[in-house]
Image: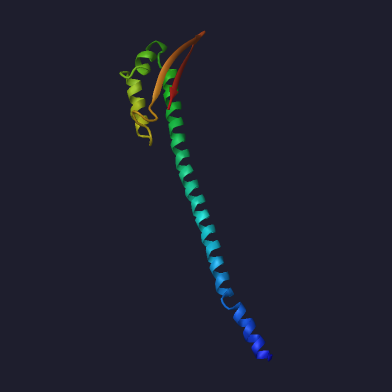
Length: 126
């Protein structure tokens, strides 16, 4: 057997291996890139959700601060019924948040008068 024949035989056995390795590398790179894109998309989605949760918390805190400064005798009329002016203003502000509607994630506002000396505790749920 000549050296040329042995070299050609070895070349034929390894022919296409480089192409197969390149194909596997491309597939691994594509899977990694898709995973990275999904991670970035999830982070952007959660960042938006956190923004809306922060806005809902700020809205509820603002409503509670207004309730604390209002006259305790008028809290029930202003906030505990759907006809109250305070409730309507709070409901209009909450309706601007995404995912808030009349049936899903609806606004729940009730005034529980827990008198402890002169303390009135209003509650707002968004």
